[in-house]
Length: 230
Image (cartoon, rainbow, N blue to C red; front, side):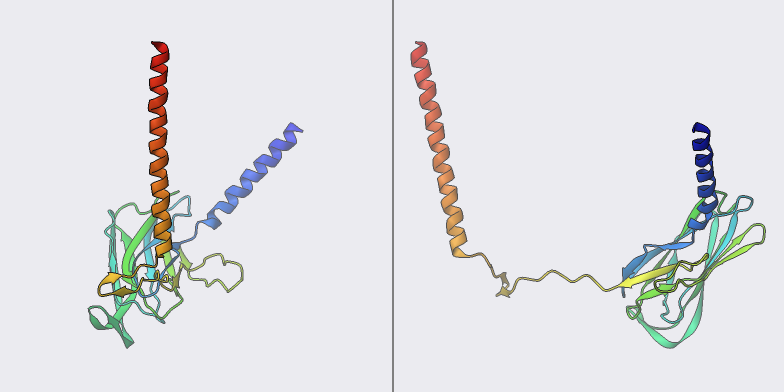
């Protein structure tokens, strides 16, 4: 029985080890953000090979809901290049209207790149569109052995995730703000009833009285105890 258990355990470990690389997809974090907001997106890229490192990552930006600008975070040992392209419909931003949008961002390793068993986060600061429910970022990962992996497959609604899914950012509506209290003449109107205030005052008075009686009782008891002791 012990040998059988060991065999099954070993088989389980082998299955987990074989399945592990399939879990390590390129993804974007956070997975969701508010429409029309400014956000910092991190593209998480794992190295899935055991005999090569990742030395180049190219993230394609959406064209159906274009993003006007992208600022990259400096990463030691990597260079970043933002490529733009003209858009048919000008994009309105806080700084004005722009006619170009981000086409892609390319990170190239100037050093060893992403090593075996490691991952790297590539961060960009962007202004998100307000008219989309999700954004897809097809990504190409290149290894030092010349192989490329295209993370471009679209997951069908309600269907299974493909082998190489493209990173997807879900866009949500802003959370509803809390109801504000009506104001009159610059002073917030109170919703507290007079009866509630009176009850609170009564309870406070009773508490004071009870406390005073307890203090007097304690003093009386102490005095009697001293007299008995005398």
